[in-house]
Image (cartoon, rainbow over all chains, first blue to last red; front, top):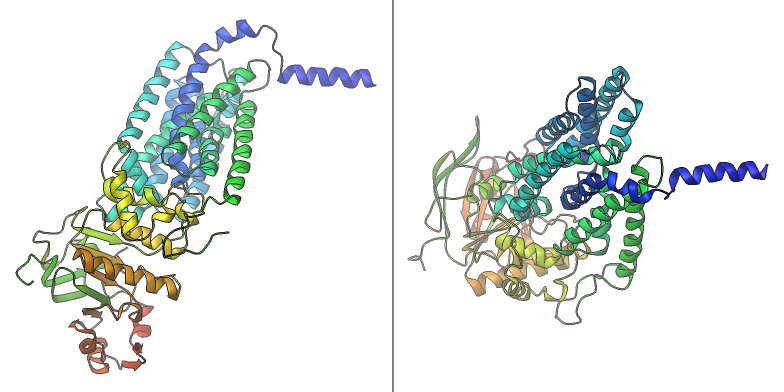
Length: 304
Length: 266
């Protein structure tokens, strides 16, 4: 009885962690590691604005439509990347145009998301090919990145980074302080649509690596963790990128040693980072993050 | 004083949305350092006036100049203080970041280290140095509005627009914020246009009142405009102005129009 237990446990364990042949496997996922690192860089930066603009739910909605696009491409024997990009850009633009207010936005996402997921399931059900391909779109795959795909990936990532750098300051202003930004002449609406496009493309990249269901772990969790421990406009993006790269690359390296999909590793790493940051943030608040220098005739209300 | 370029000059101003005219024939010349309080019920066009000054809404008729030139989006001659809003305590922005955005947040690119010395000086001017590095969401409402005043003064504007900045502040903070705005306009010569529902906190500082009402508008010293006769004429319904121990209470008028007319600006 106990021998059987041990055998089952062993089997379970080797499926999740098995590092024999690790060296030769590593060479196979060279491209995926590059893609993971670049995705961490883009995702970490995009995540900062996703937090500022309160777009977490939108990210989820876009990723489901990105999944539908990729599944349609698979069914029609088209490029999966192209399908994912089309799906997420359509979703991002729809959400950006229709939902300028948070309440409208959430209901629109709530309507679009299940429709996208349903379409995706339909396309996958009709697709006659290998089941692993189907599953990979939802939960991520690590060996799918060949040279052509990597080049596409890097070109899109470079475009996104350039766009983010260009609109960094006004986008920050428009996200944090929309009324005053508009008064200061910042084109808040155009920036909002522009950011939705960036977000859509970033989601399409992330779907390739971690799968549609777990995009949030690279586009939200790292930035959410970073804002727990800092409010600095420099430290938050740097930490967010560091966390996202660690999760993506670390997840791929660990996934290599098992036969389960990549996403549980990525999500677990980013979740643990988040937990640690929450603890640190709570300690910092308790030690007096809001404490003022003890000067000045004006004393403000102390925050608990 | 009247020889200087006026921070704001409105001649025969008219603003209408379709068939509905908010105000017309509005003449207003504001001198440097003047404190003008804008009163009126919801939907009377107070916010629209601010939007016109900010260059966000064009006038339907008449002529508006800011510092001698037509209004322009993002003009550095105009500072803007909005209502205090709830900021998420975990929002990644500190008091000093908000002030800096007012200085160069309208420019493209990342921006590097930025004008740190200017930000420190602005925070010191409003007495907010002690919490310059505290996340905005961890500040009290009054402290947040102090930071907003520093932000609005960043471009050394000739004109400071205050859009209900006292809303949701308690009495003590209302007093502090208005006193600070008054101090800033006296030391810097910045003209102030202060939109509010509540006249009493700003009454001691107000040079002139612009009262926008359904049946017209009035401009003048508070004692001349805020009378039962003038307001009854402006509203077209009986309005009574009561004065008690330096405070003014306006009965009628406001309530009748507050509900069925919405702010058209949104």
